[in-house]
Image 1 (cartoon, rainbow over the protein chains, first blue to last red):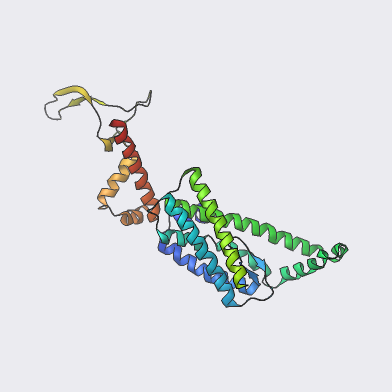
Image 2: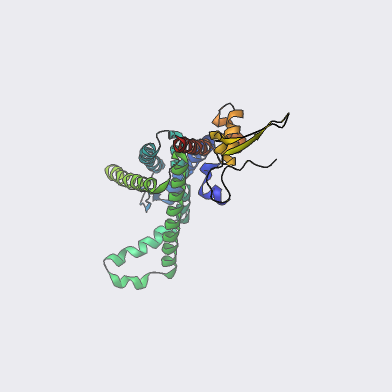
Length: 194
Length: 92
């Protein structure tokens, strides 16, 4: 079970993984749309005021394609025999944990809690008017968001490792570099299409 | 049948063949003969090479029969190739 959750790439075929990844991408877009949480970066998600399904779908697609491109370049440097399909399926499958987090905001509870926090930016005394449940909800969202991000990165790293037979420190640094560059590129893209 | 030891249990250096016996007349030949490269691989690597040959060199077929993904099996093959190259280098 642990292997399935952390490293399914060792045992499952690329076709099965890609199919699961594509299905998850559709469900991820739906999760983003219904909860009004945008995946506006390779390892980002933020509350959005309004979000169309088309935009939500484009968002998840941009993230997957940019992560795929950057990790594929890193994997090809490590091992020229790396196949694109293995990195693509890893990029898609690794996003699954992130798609679970927006489900917390399906009924808009998180948006309401965040809206209560906004006046504190200009008036610190407004913090007294905020309900404890709002703090708890935002805290739970933050913790789950961090946990899902770590899980997602672990999945992506394992996918990269299996696809390229990566070993040692060099492979780790190439992966970290690829992820950082992917985050920067996606941020630039999302800033342009905002 | 017992597995062929390839390293000395005492100092871990590679073992060499010092005696061969004819299975028919039991004539014995003594000397110092290196084991063939493939026999110097660890037993699980030898099993892998055997499976690879039996599968006609099809990694996809092997992946299916082993219940592993294609890149996992290919990585295993790459690791075996690395070990063979190291053995060749150490003997030349």
